[in-house]
Picture: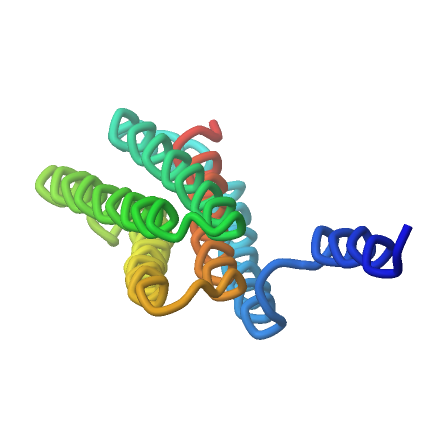
Length: 194
């Protein structure tokens, strides 16, 4: 066994155990999770104060759109993870298509959320209700993150035209996975919890 043969497994092991992305992205993600966590705690406190009012208002949410948005974001995360795998094995054109599919899912999510908001507002469910004030703020801040995520994915897709930078793709996908995770918590807390 030559020296280069012995070094290859160490390099592979080291890269396999490396945390994806960089420290700045992780700080941003943890900061966002902290912000949303505080808001979820506030939601739960207010919900325990008025459980009947929250439950009555919650019944007016469009569960079909909520489920559709959940499926859209889970699908987008599957595309995003596949994009990272593709760029790691050098299949850059495939990675670019998968990043575009992920961004397309983000745009579909935003369109569905706009339809849902329009329905709620047209039925008179505004921020005058405690439940709907939490609903609009949580989903609105999340939607702003989706918009930022689509922008980040656009930059990632553009950069993949120039060079294959695995770390850059990982960072964009990390942010996207955080968006997906936040939606799962929002969906469970706001739509499903009774």
